Each structure stands twice: as C-alpha cells, then as structure tokens.
Length: 303
Image (tube, rainbow, N blue to C red; front, side, top):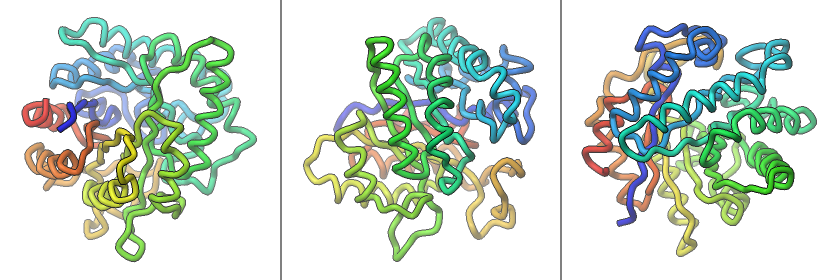
C-alpha cells in the first residue's frame, strides 16, 4: 500500500465552529478580512489533528462570495494574506506541513454552466500572484468541468513562464450527487473517463471533493477501472452536507448554511475513507463540515 497523505478538513465550518466571523455570502473570506488570526487558529487546529497538508483560505476570494468591487480592489492582497496565514502556521508546526494554494471555482461552486472563459484568465492570474510566494503546491478544487481545469492549467503555465517555476498540481473535481445510470459524473455531466483523459498527463494527482462520500466511493471505483495500470496518484475529500433524503438538502450555494450530517461521525467517515484507501487512494482528508476530529481519526488509522 502506498503511503497515505492526509490533508486538512473544511476551513469555512471550522471558522464557524471556533466563533470566527462567518456568514453567507462571504463564507470563509469574512474571517480573512475581519479576523485573520482566526484563520491561523483554524490551520493550527487541523495541524494539531495531524494534517500533513493545509489549504490556503482562498476558496471564497471570488466575486461570487465577496462581490465584484471588493474582488477588483483586493483580490491580490487577500490572496497574499491567505497564503501568509497558511505559511506562518505551517512553519510553526512541530511536524513538516505542506501548504497547497487553493484555486477555487471562479463563478460559484457546483455551477460549471456559469464559467466564463474570457474573464477566468485574469482572475486566476491574480489569485496565483497573491498565493504563489507562500505555497508548496497548487490545489485546483471543486472543479465542475474539464473546461475549468484547462483554464487553471493555462494560468499556471503562464505563471511558470513568468517566474521560472512550476509547482506540483493536484486537480480536484466535484461530482454530481445524482448518479447517471448508476455512474458518477462531474457537475457538468462529463464522465469520469472523459475527465481522466483530460487530466491524466497534465496533473500530478486527481482527486474528488465537496461531494457526498458515498458518491465519491462510486466515482473512485470508476476511476480505478478507467486508470488500468496508468500510474496516476489519486484521492478524495468529501463533505458532510445533507443528502437528498434530508429535509435540509434543498439548498443553493451562497444562500444556505446547513447543519452537517449527524451520521458522519469521525469513525463512520474513516470507515468510508478506508474503502477509498483500499482502492488505491493515497491522498485523503475532508471538505465542508469535516473537522479536526475527523482528520485526527484518519491520522490514527492511516497516518
């Protein structure tokens, strides 16, 4: 079995848990703007749980969350601050900790149909500019389509040409929680097979995130079948959002702050992740509503 890398959990809900400024639509960006020391504390909590990789709090630094005017005025400054908070926290850790720079969906989570290929390049360039001094690798996360991934890759190529450096890239995609003929698909409807062909030789790892863990289990099974003997590293980090059978499941991004699934205790979540590891996943952690206690359980089992 390959060594397992354990990443952190969901920043936004951890900020809410510790009493940091938190609301919609700003989500995790509000604490960054009003109380950045709380971001440092949240990073510390995940590292204390044993996370080997922490993710910059840059997910919500997009117009969808902070508004166009604030983005235009402050995106590089906020991204730089997010990077510094993670870097300083990692540098103070007792164990080696890597910082990955979060490059989020630019036009809203789960909304690949809103992707604008004309606006995306400049937005990505600004996020990368602010984050790059502080990060060890890149994490393009919650991507809803191959098109979104292509834009990230182009932006990182531009950055590498300017700066003469190319860091490792992990590409993480969100799966629709509605299976299609029993199969998992991207939020765009694209298949796992189409995704793999687009990413296989262009990213250092392929992950699934911000989806129901049960759906991710299906998707990873399809990915392993499609991979065959190709040596691509893969993994996943799920959310604990309510499922379709929960009365709180009817929510829209940027409008609703729900309670986590009560059944996804640290032990139950680790049981699911154990299945991922058995299929060959070597990068695991958590997304929204997966907290330090879940990460500690993963470390106890796989660290």
